[in-house]
Image 1 (cartoon, rainbow, N blue to C red):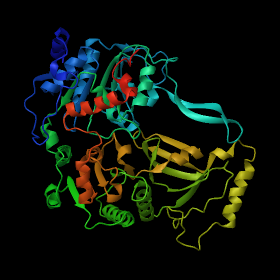
Image 2 (cartoon, rainbow, N blue to C red):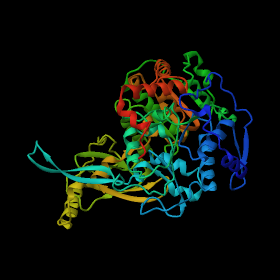
Image 3 (cartoon, one colour):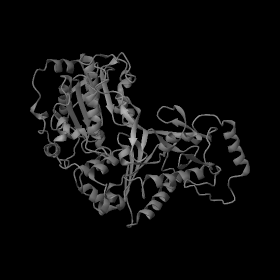
Image 4 (cartoon, rainbow, N blue to C red):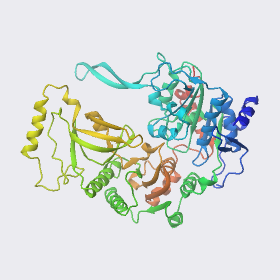
Length: 556
């Protein structure tokens, strides 16, 4: 690394033509081959060999000269390797020195003046696994960087004819309370997920002109609301694209399938079996066209059977579906949770939170505040004073139906609930509390937390199946992807590619061939080369001047 740094610091040449905006193109994806011998080789601070190819070296050189820039690459091209090289190089070269936190509650003092941020906690947790220990505190979600917090404002309600209190989440860091000026380099990871509105809030909170580095995959899904900043930065900043897929990556049939999708080549039904690699990749088409109700039941039977045979592990694996409703995550989560609860003889509790009724059992996998957790305990909340929930039982299902009509709320249960209310009749506002206290063990940290507020319970969802959008920035050992013709409006090349690349070791794609084929042919962001995609975003700027600030003048 020292040798490479010396070369970087000695370089006085301008930005190379190959990394100029709108002039970098993608190599044809029909010709996917292992990368050639790399152009440079260095060692990291631990003495481990790091080998960079010519494009990676080009980007690292650009970043170490302090330039704001963009790095784009598909799965398996080494974006993480580049980020490591840039981060270590900036620290070693002294460009980004020691960060003085200046009161920022999430950035520790005496850590490098580099901040790596991403949209989701899942993405941040993955980033932390690939940086040194002293940098982990500086890996943070954008919302935490901006210190988002609830703000209560009194507004006039014409409907009620009075002032009412309205709560909004707003950034604590802004032009009036800026981010620390000691941040010299701000790296946006997974920047295809970062919308323009959120990016503008970051820019408004910067009192200075730091180096901005954008890393991402333009082939992935853009944000749900509005366009991503990554596409627009292609039109204004030096851009390097990694096109060479590493040999070890190409050994994975999952990566080969991902690049087949990017090549816009559909997979005929006759080829589905050709893509079957036992223990790694299975394309499993529906045998016949079925409606979404029967598709849901068929998928439910598939996962029940997979669990019973040991082919599906709820704690380690993930199911991805485009929708929440109908044949979506909501119902499939309940189907799986209900089966697992019956298998372990679990007691199902009806939990009342405000006007909502939920059903959970100890051992359920849930998603809380965008993180995976396991319910370790469920107990009555002694300060709750609302409607009495159904008696917890092994015969209660996840839809609230009692499968054994002889089991119901006993007089003793009612008396117990009323006695708990009477004991604490003077305690606080019970409107905001739920009927039960849930103890959660966070899977990433093993931290244990308790939640009893209605808002927290209502935000809790079963975590066996997620939408593809929620899965961005995450990876799992084994991923099951379910597509159906009822999802057709959302299935595009970007969604297929994003879903497939969430799997690290094994992938099952359960789908209708026609839906899968049409999805490969459809694009949300037009163009097959980087130059074409940059033109797509440039056209948006030219047709809507509201985006113009993204490409110029966004730093004060």
